[in-house]
Amino acid sequence: MPRLRDTFILSICVVLHWSSALTISAELREFWIQQPLDHFESRGVSHESFRQRYYVDWSHQDGQSDVDGVPILVYIGGEASIDQFLGEGGIVTVAASRLKGLVVYVEHRFYGKSIPRGSIDTALLDPHVRGCLTSDQALEDLAKVIVTLKSNLSIPRSPVITFGGSYAGTVRFRMIYSNITIGSLASSAPILMSANVPAHKQYCYIVSQDFENESKECYQNISRSWGLIDEVASQHDSLDTLSRAFSTCSPLRSTDKLKTYLAQMYNYAAQYNGRFGHIHQLCRVLFRASKNDLLKGIGDAVLSLTQDKRCNDPTGTAAKPFSILDSASAKAWDWQRCNEIVPYQYCGENTMFEKSSFDPSVFSESCFEEYGSYSHPLWNSTIYNGRDLKITSNVIFSNGLMDPYSGASILENISETVISITTKEGSHCLDLTPAQDDDPKWLKDQRDLELQIIARWLNVTLPSDNSPLVWAIWSRFLVAIVLVHIIA
Image (tube, rainbow, N blue to C red):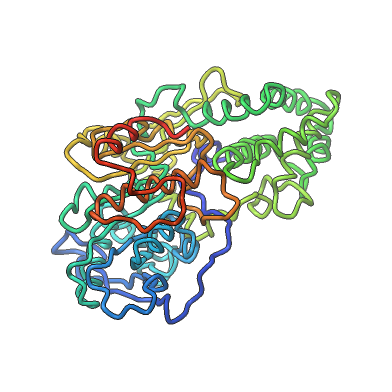
């Protein structure tokens, strides 16, 4: 049996597969800063430090030498190498271009090249060291990077705005460091993930709705397939039959990994549907399958989303449609999920998945077996659900309603300055992906609205770029009224 942590739940942020648009140059420079391993302890490992990496992009300055006062737009790195995110700032780079701002990409501790003790395996072996991989420690890192950068560049007057997607959007920097940043955009940030998320807002329920909205027949066929897999599995030479039907790269040894793989592929298709139309593609291929060969049809449909399109690989990662976490990042993220980001997710009734439950005690035991320490099941609700978001200001929560994580995010305005922007067709972190000429109008409008709110925080007037939404027409009253509603 696969570990509970592997059976259904995806990591909160899977690295998107677009190629970076930026290369190291005079305008994009790599920097390093020495960070305390433990910002909070005066004894124990507090004397130890590690090198943290960040980048500064000057490409939007148009040769301007005096940059004091220009906005600093900080892209908060999440559970992957920061290299994955260079040039993929979406609204960040759009805002930098329009506002002539500096863009700073900050790598999260224990990811990429910012790993204490040289390797993630060595770091995770020591309970004291791995205990320093927390979002609270990452917040302190980020504060030190920003303060140090402003000092080194002699830009004390430059206002700071932070951007984060998914996990990186949940780290609440604006809530804690309102003296350092004037505002924040949190894209697809599931800050309400806890045991209290109702069934109709659960991850697999939203995935199922996405598929049913595309095609009821597609939804029903996927729902039927689980029982059919079990039926075939009970027959002679069942695994060979299933291996052929699903065109697996190697013979199946059990149905567990096959079912996990299929569920993950459906999840990926929904989470990153976006401009790619993965759900439509999968359902279109499945529709062509004969009813007498449903399993082969599903195998072909899932295969159409893979990178090499040669075979399905339930035992590996090579065939998934998106480049996922490298092995070092996956190890670090697995520890973070055990330590503080418990994935309260299950499949209840009325989904296309097999029914499942989430038992915090079983999850915690699996963490103890792996790391010798139990999970903290109340961390999410203690940090977020018990905190009144009305006490903060200047925060945008942006969500695409096709994103399976949207059910655990903020989908309504909290106040006039803590704003929710939702898009019906949007998927995970789509506003943070690179802006393209052929982006749909609703996505361009979403980024434009986000940009106008940011300009409002900065108290500046945007130069016109012939966008259908022009800053000059937006008064304070209109912004307050319009932002209450969903972008259709």
